[in-house]
Amino acid sequence: MGDKPAAAHLTTGAYPLYDPPMPRRPLHGIRIVDLTLERGELTGRLLADLGAEVLRVEPPGGSPARSMLPVVGDQSLFFTFRNAGKKGVELDLSKDPDRERLHELLACSDVVIDSAEPGSWADSGLDADDLARRHPHLIVCSITAYGRTGPYAGRDVPCAVIDATAGMAFKAGVPEREPLLPPGNIADDTASMHAVFAIECALVQQHATGAGQVIDLSVNEAAAQIADWSLSNWTRSLDAGMPSLDSRIGPGPVYTILPCKDGYVRLVIIAERHWKAMRAWLGEPDYLQDPEYETFMGRFGIADAVLNPLYTELFSTMTMLEVAEECQNRGIVCTPILKPDDVLVNPHFEAR
Image 1 (tube, rainbow, N blue to C red):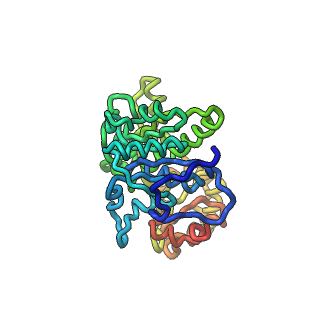
Image 2: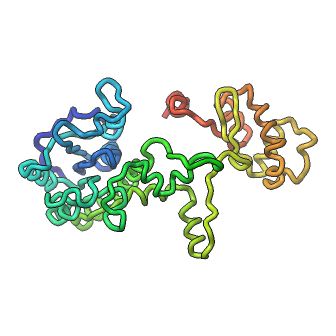
Image 3: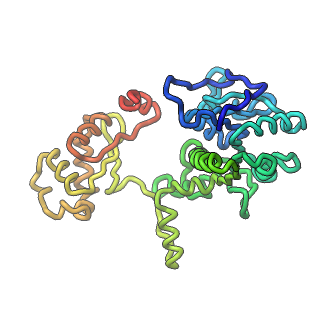
């Protein structure tokens, strides 16, 4: 987009900058103004990782997310993780002079990201549609709970509510128990990743035409897209006039969760070659040689009574990583179920 004038009143030391030595990144030269508050903050961080100059606008005293738990020292890990790589400026957007400073900044920017619900900026000239009219070159990415239109538009709800309305809570937990909330801010952060993709596509169009656009991004719709195959199942059922038979997927004969020395692994034996490899590992006992067991449904019938106890005994003296490594060597699909602290010391994760 060419060189842009330096933005006034900005500090480069507001957040930890991630700037490793590497060739010019794909969004070098793109300037993005970030007006998000909690919801959507990850969007700007990911775009900064791709090389964009991201200018984070905070209210006087800083974003409320700066105090969100967990906190180490005086730094919120929630805030720091989602704002690394950004520059920062404080503006009081309830006052005309600071709103004009924002407009000056937007005039020399390519994208603005906002997470205010429709109606929040009433009579301020800062609503997504207002910004698009005043700055026709600008890509305005509006990340809201339920989108800018529809019966739920304008509902200001936390991520946990969207987990429920997007179908994610129903899909979480043990099948025989009540639904559970998924961990973390999965819905909001999923929407942020959708926003990054949408902004990148809009930048291509902006480069070709010089025109901006409003991206209406619903967190609810983004979260619904990752509830495995539920939407496609339900769509087919509704079209056919059939009841939905969707259910939660817990441990079972297809993706079996089994204990081992230091935790759990998930074992997947579906193909015939997986079964033959596992049978060889078990020592080729005579009682497992029935050709019927070479089919998935044949093994399904003896999974709980015969196979899972055998696997549990086999894995009892091995760690999660040892089980997964041995399965990999034998051509069997298996994964350790890692806790967050396990992830950080996982040799592959560390190497990457």
